[in-house]
Image (tube, rainbow, N blue to C red; front, side):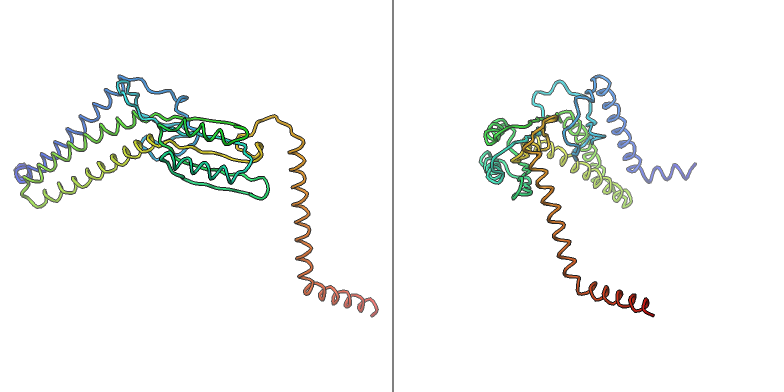
Length: 296
């Protein structure tokens, strides 16, 4: 018993540090519980995404965003906007360049661009980011470039609650860091100084991570993403109309299939001809041996 009392006297700062950390963690959990119980959660059906990947806090589970409880008293909400267009166009390459140029004129930039099969039924997929305030202007211009808008899909992901939840965590970590720094300045035992310094480093890492997530949310909400699919044939687009029967398109597809088969046969004949220097002598020798055996 005397040894325990002596240890406590020699490690007062360490014990005080443990008490402060336990208090802050308990306070944080009770605050989170009271906030969650007082506000209804969002419906899962309203949280479905068109695409299923996002690195922000909260995560995605089978296409559903696990968001924190809705916050109703926030005026300026953060909404990440994703738009998807399928356009039938006359010249894919020209429209692709026009899409990228318009994005840059509006203060945006190209994320990716891919053109496939330019000599046959050309198609492309272009992804650009546009300032959210100019999204409608960009969409209107992109529609004007097409012969036909096959489909259009606008998705909005409200991340305000996520941001507020991160902000709450950030304030808690900053308070913890301030307390640890006070203890560090008053510590005299080397062991206590090293332990407190390690805790400060861990808390700072958590602060940096939360700030990074908040920055990601703000930047993605400020810059809307537009994915544009282009093709000269609407049936080649990702959102081709169902139940449509077009003899002209079917004839083209059948002609392409025949051409592929003919090219394949021609390629096979060339390979056989080139390798004839090997298989022809082998065949002649085999026939000669068989004929000689029959005579004997």
